[in-house]
Image (cartoon, rainbow, N blue to C red; front, side):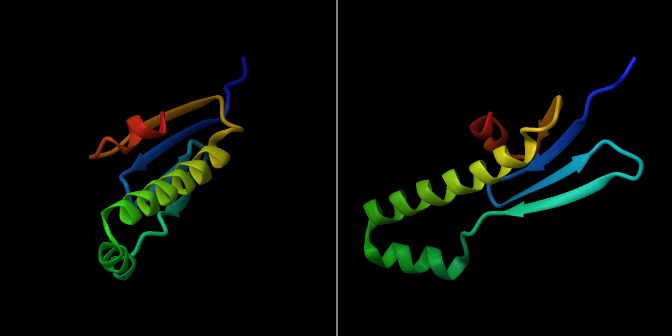
Length: 88
């Protein structure tokens, strides 16, 4: 019996730590492009601009994670925020 490829992802809204169940465990980190300086700049532009920018950055972050997990048979999502639910 063969076991499929398995991946664990600890994530919040800023980082995702992808850990492949292998020997040894291989870890990859995907980070959101949002920075403190960028958030301050978008706040100065207005609330609607800030919301659009945040949505674009979240979408790019989740798309990068989705591209990394497509080749796995089982994925375990966990972490302290609801980012895992948003990705799901």
